[in-house]
Amino acid sequence: MAQKIRKAVIPAAGIGTRFLPATKAMPKEMLPIVDKPIIQYVVEEAVSSGIEEIVIVTGWNKRSIEDHFDYPYELEKRLLEAGKKEQAAEMLKIADMANFIYVRQKGPYGNGTPILNARSVIGDEPFAILWGDEFIHSDPPRLKQMIEAWEKHEVPNISAVRVPKDSVSRYGIADVSPIEGNVFKINSIVEKPAPDKAPSDLAAHGAYIMPPRLFEILAETPLGKDGELWLIDAISALLKEQDIHAIEIKNGIYYDTGNKLEYLKTVVAFGLKHPDLNGDFRDYLKSLDL
Image (cartoon, rainbow, N blue to C red; front, side, top):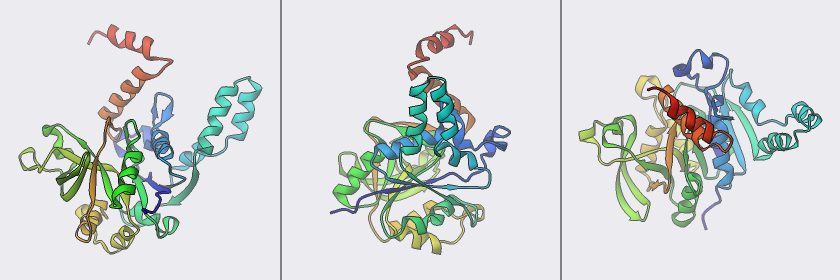
């Protein structure tokens, strides 16, 4: 029987230079998508998939992330005094979603470093990784689909979505062999290939279920491009030792909020779906002389 996936690591220590000056004092993960910060969508996905402990790897300017998921005693009191019981309950719900653990990032630049920093908290058990500034909205949740595949096959896996051929150079594209349904064996991952060099249109990125062996590999992985420690280099090394699957996410829409254009697209998409705004906002967009 597969070991249960109880913990998730969310790296959130990046500076967010693409969004300066907004991110000079605000973490990019706290930028709002209508009325929720980006990272809350990521946490909600993890919790709805059965995750019990969430390890958020932060940096010197990320205190507001910790505050966001903390118990807001003073805010709760003020909301209750103002008769806003539903809002008070919503604020408490945020803090109660999971057991939150915060680790300060240290080590070389690169997206492999925050994963390695979580090693002592994760311990000797398989775990999930989700980025703090992007997410896939799907039903059932992306991570739940991945956990179900893990429980059936007991093989590490990576979430995957189909991307337009002219966009493959933005992603890690998987060369795969079919296993069953939406599950594929990854033969290799080609980072940001030219459209005519891409092995498929399946982008494998965004969320991962990995064994604790990944920590040992990361600790031994030499610094790669730009002198940084890259997660993909460690995963490629793990791939030489054992199978890794790509899970094509069913009913999934990928939201990359890591750059300005995609962030704005995400805000508009969620604004159009928001129960309090969708009608008026839709009418406003139609009225624009574009």
